[in-house]
Structure formats: C-alpha cells, structure tokens
Image (tube, rainbow, N blue to C red; front, side, top):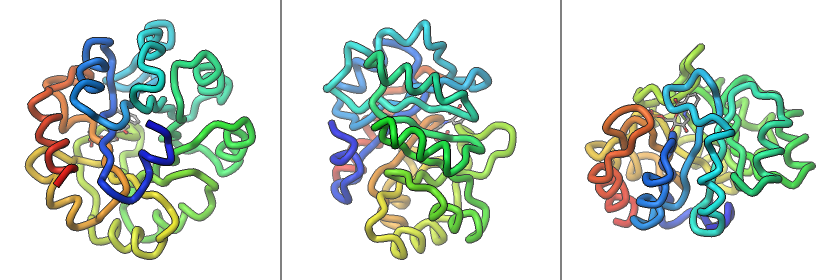
Length: 217
Ligand SMILES: O=C(O)c1ccccc1NCC(=O)[C@H](O)[C@H](O)COP(=O)(O)O
C-alpha cells in the first residue's frame, strides 16, 4: 500500500499502531489492515528498539510501515527508511515545521500528530508541510497511546475546512465507538493503539477484525 492510497478519502483506511512482534505484523497483513505503526520512542509502553525491528523488512510492499517518533534526532528515522524498515515517518512529539521540511527534502513522507484540546491546537496544522495531519488526544509527557478520545466535532470541522489535507483520526478508538467515529469525523484513516490490544504492544485480533469491518462499511 502506498502512502497516497492509505491517505485517499474512501474507504477509511486503518492503521494499527504499536506493533512489537513479527507474528502480529504478519496477522495484520493477512487480515488486510492498511498500515502498521512501530513505536521508536523509548518511553512508550509499545517501544520497539531499532535493533529488534528487522522483522519489518519482510513486510515491505505488503503493508504501509509507519515509524512513530517523539522528539527524535532525525538521523534515526532517515536511517530506518534507508534500511527499508519503514516507509513513512510519524512525528508525535514537539517537532518543528523545519523538522518536517528536512524529512520531506530527503524524500520521506511525513505524518505530523497534533494533540487536540481546542481549536487553537488545530490551527497549528497549517505550520507543517506534512503529507497528513493526525489528530490525537492531548497528552503532555506521554504523547500518545492513551486511549482518550478527542472532541469529534472539532475534528469534523477541521476535515471540512481542509478538503485537500488527509486527516487521520486517533485517540481512544475501539470496536465499540469506531462506527460512530467514522460517521462523525469522516477522516481519511483511523489510527488505533490501545483499542486493538490485549496488553500494550500485543494485538487482539478479534478487536482488529471488528475495527476493519467498521472501516469497510
Ligand atoms: O502508543 C504509544 O505508546 C505512543 C506513545 C507516544 C507517542 C505516540 C504513541 N502512539 C501513537 C499512535 O499513533 C497511537 O495509535 C495514538 O496515539 C492513539 O492511541 P490510542 O488512543 O491508544 O488508540
């Protein structure tokens, strides 16, 4: 799957984030998930150390592989792209517009995550020349993977006001609320970590199947 197809408006794509095991990645591919996220922030409960990420290579061309980074030295994502372990970089911390430009100049597609509390947080999106904006719960110090939902009315308004910008909705999406989230926000893609797990970093495939079914409706 190419970044363009993942971010196309319809049908809603699904990214499952925080994959730590090769077997889980294989099952996600088999189920037809559009993208997987591997978290390279050492403080995440779903941390995947770069030296243990070699298994991602075997999924090249079979699923979009997104590396998640928080305030990282940009040499690391660039190296992982060069080594063929990831396709896209997701910046999930306090990165600057210049950080996005530097990765884009190196030919690397970028998703920039924003923590959303209020309209002002969304207005920051225009500072970044990212391929996509990911809207997540505001989580100081933790940054992501909290299971907290955001204000979907604000998210919908952002989608409507930015028709050319692919928006990924994250934050507390579960099999129970996924259909309502899609109907309320109509994002290009969903991103789910805790709502698709049995424990941090270990995926629950019944939940993944329920999420996929809602995306296909
Ligand atoms: O998942 C994490 O542990 C995490 C930590 C720090 C930054 C980002 C992180 N996850 C990134 C994601 O894309 C998650 O899917 C997103 O935050 C939504 O998480 P959840 O609310 O648990 O579905």
